[in-house]
Length: 233
Length: 233
DNA sequence: TAGTGGTCTAGACCACAAG
DNA sequence: TTGTGGTCTAGACCACTAC
Image (cartoon, rainbow over all chains, first blue to last red; front, side, top):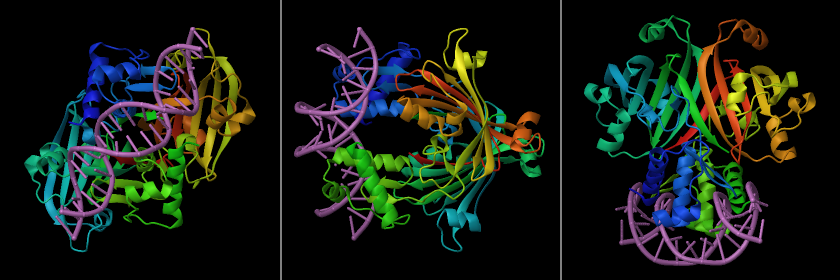
């Protein structure tokens, strides 16, 4: 674990264990620097991480303050990558509908930058949040990066498997989303009326060397598609 | 202008003017360091800014690579704060329906942390993207931070006015959004059928000293609510 | 004016990717 | 092994807030 990560974790604990409320002031940089025995840059890197998470705010000339937490029931779009939420305030489970190796469809070939006649893993799942239907997820994985995947693995977190078992380093993602209505098949799976509003969410993920390895399309049950984004100017 | 900002701008120009395509490699850190005559930390800060914008990716041990731009027609949720898009690839205009000082409604008092009987500026606008109806925006501003606002100012960018004229430094925002359907009034204003799907977007903005000054609620025409988020692991 | 966070530097050393 | 980006340091100096 890197030094700035452990410092960040220590500050998280400081906030949660004290506990500090929104608006409360943290010790100054100079104090924290002595307390954690690190350089100013390392401390600032840790604080900026926490700032991006929405946990605190550094006010130039004034101090470091605890920020409002998100409202309950909303998912932090950044810390909940693949829905493994930061504070584990939700329980995510999956039912795997499909998991097979197929010839890549045209659109997937484009998104994953594949040659003609390339194979991909195709996974379709229904995901539940605290037992309620959250979304339908359709994913395609580049077999050059993810050489093996099966029904059992797909029941858990595929991203955890890719990172921890396959030792693939995830670099970055392109996320696109828009609002639409459910078609009959989607409505049936989500147990919603056809034509219900929905959030369509697309994500292409790349390894840290820039190879696209995942093309996913998620259709949300709008009752549970509540998102929070902590934005820093 | 800070050094790391001007370096970031110079690298943007380098990419757009050369022009460099997705996947193209930039010069190494050592080269850029000499080229711009800055320290490694300053250079890294500039590169991390560009990484957050989705313009490039730094691959540890390999190099710095240009990233795919977003698809046309999508708004970058981060660089398009208040819809003043980075590349000005869209033209945003507004029709002001209301702009008046009123007693703060209960919910607004909570969000803006106001005392009883506090006044706020209430602004309701229809916003257009390239002439097409984009959204209905309802905003409330803390009069302690924004002491004056009128119809003419509300026709332009209120955030630009707050930052540039009032010299208020914006610190951070809490953003919440979910999917829903339009009620009759909203549908009428957006010229959509009642019950059409929509994105409801809420934003509370704070000054850099932590004072909440804006509580906004935006209802999007779903035909134009297409968003892009460049995500960095 | 005192105290706070922000910028910037030069340089040592570490971790990773690619040949 | 070479070259790349990432971490970490100590310290000078700047910019802002609050008294």
